[in-house]
Length: 199
Image (cartoon, rainbow, N blue to C red; front, side, top):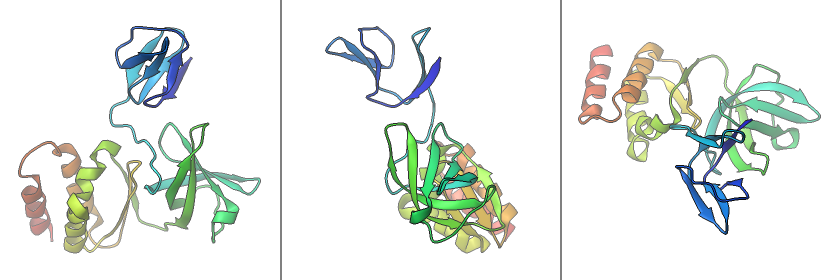
């Protein structure tokens, strides 16, 4: 059976020599965000996986509403929960929402607050590890992008981006460029050139 483990999580009550682990007091702990196979004793690192941090902005889709709780699909190994008492709006399955991470409980369920419905627009899925580059230092990259294209953009730290109004296709092209070339020099200038040509 495979399960998602986070850094510091205990894998076994005995010492096992597995890459990506440490042994303390005869027990084995993961040092990586990974998938762990309990039977085969294999740890598979999950590259660029989003790990929820209190205060993170996320974008998700309402899966269902039951017992005064909304279950949210976060496109991640965790599910999100919104308690009806924490929302000023009522949602239905399929609604796209923006919300803020309050905490992650022991069952790896992400408790969300301050939800609001996002109507219309387009969803773009990117690697969560690329989000900091898409935002830029001090959110400068995304500010320049929206200023040039006239779009409204909400960036979820879980790798989902909502784009509406203005030049949606140009914004999408620019974000895809940032994701694909995040590791290269001179990226900001290339993105600005793309935007200038497309405006």
